[in-house]
Structure formats: structure tokens, C-alpha cells
Image 1 (cartoon, rainbow, N blue to C red):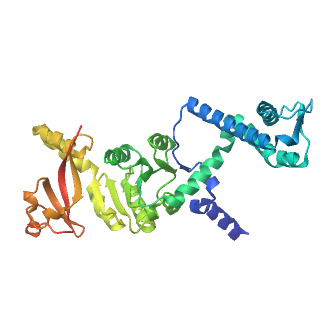
Image 2 (image 1 turned 180 degrees about the vertical axis):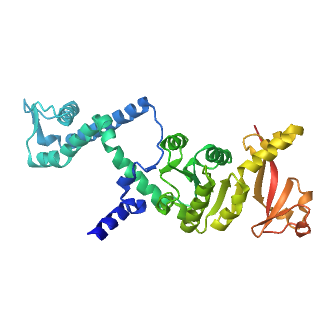
Length: 355
């Protein structure tokens, strides 16, 4: 008995095994924002389309209907009958009399009547079907998401990382934010990002965010020990993902690398260096901030080597090259290893960003 209870509790905690409708409060897929006028206009047009379809069906079989005076139905009569029939008013002054007309009424007019009523009360139905719509969107997203970026933690560092990615023209749909704070996730969802509510230290939460298919994972937690645990879990779930982690203390840098991080950013030391430099040369800090801001001025970027640049020196190119990425390793300009640019190299350079 105890074993069955533990198994049941374990299944409830495993998010990836839950049905999609049970994930509605965990995963949020952003929706297109429409004005109330657009929503009302769209629903009215749908109701008119259903009405005209019913009129068309009745008009094609108008010989099977009669009015109170046994007259043949005109188009206006067909419109009148369809209107009172779909609205369930049903005065009875126009009725189907032949078997074919009655069969068509049962097979087509009745479903159109139900659809017409659903459209008319769609404002109420929207609230009732929100959970089903979200479940369908979650199912479709989980099957389609590939090569995206998962951002763990949406505090100051996480928000800045997302802003930088959006500034580099990365689509919001390619970014997934994981956090335990619903308020932070609401802010991320407002930007059109997919959000997952839960602790990234749990492998099933990361699987729900698609880390197993992600191109990169950014760990921007508030605590270094949490960052280490998240990195360990992310490396286990996504062995091929590039993991970039931020920590406060440099003493913990080796722990993150041992946990599987490809790059480690020490936020406290970086800020401290900038503060020390700003004391005597504030313009240097201004230039560094410019290089790190993608929206305007200059920005550090990476690109492939062009065909006419192969064999040339990286110091003599039209762009200001800072380093060469060769076989996944960064070699700074000036090293004898990169006196000549090779075909599969990538250039780390300073690019001009237009305002």
C-alpha cells in the first residue's frame, strides 16, 4: 500500500508525464493581443457567415418548404427562415414539408443553429474554454520547440539577458523563461515569452521547458549554490546545450565549470572592475557599456569568415577584429596562431549599430 502511494505521489510530481490540460497553470504560451473591437467584429463576421450558409442551404432546397399561404419561398423568405431558425425563435410560418428538406434541416440547419448560438455567446464561452485552448497550445508548442534558449531566473540578470537577445533580433517565441516567481513570469509573458513556473533544480521542470532540445541555457539565479545545482541538472537533461551561468563569487567559478557550464560570468567582479576603472577613466566604462548594448552605437558580434577574407590577416580586415574562434576556442588577435584567417573560422568583431 505504501509503495503504491509513493508511486502515485511520484507521478504527480513528474511534470513531463502530466496531461497537457494539467500544465495550464505551469506553462504559459503568449497570445496575440487584439482590441475589443477586433474581437467583437470577428465574432459578428463569423455569425454572419454561419447565417448566410444556412440561407444558402435553405435556398437550394426552397421547393421543400412552404409558408403559411403555401407560396414558394423567395430569397427573402429563406433569409427570414434561417434567421428565426438559427436564433431558435421559430414562429412556424415557414416549415419544411418534404422528407429531403426535413433531413437537411436535421443534418445541416440544426448544427448551424448550435454553432450560431455558440458564436453569439462566445464571450462567456471564451472563459469556459480558456483551459482547453491553453492545453492545445501547450501540446502544439511542446512538439514544435527546438533550438531555443532557456533563461533560468528572471531577476535583474535574467531580464537584462533577455533584453540583449531581443536586441539581437532573436524572436520572443525562441526564448523560454523558468522561474518560481509568478510576478516575474507575468513580466516575461508581457514581452511574448513562453514561461514555465517551477524550480529549475528539478529535471522535469527543465524538460518541460525543452532543455533537451534547446540550443542554449542561461542560468541567472540569485544564489551561487542554486546556479551550480541548476547547471548540473541542465547538463544532465540537455547534454548538447550550451550553458552560460552567472555567479557572484569567483571562488565558485570552478564548481560551475565542473558542473557542465561552458561559460561563467562573475557579476560581482565585473561590476567591481568597472567601478575601479570609472574612478579615473569614466569614458572607458562608457565605451564598455556601449559595446555591451546592442541597440545603438557599437556592439561586439560574431560572424563567419567571408570567402575573400580567407588567407588574410584578421588585423587588416575592414572590421575591427578582436579575436578568432577556431575549433571552438577563442584566439585573440596578435597571436601567431591566427596570422591568417581560415575557412571555418569565426570572427569576433566590433560592428556599428545604427540608431
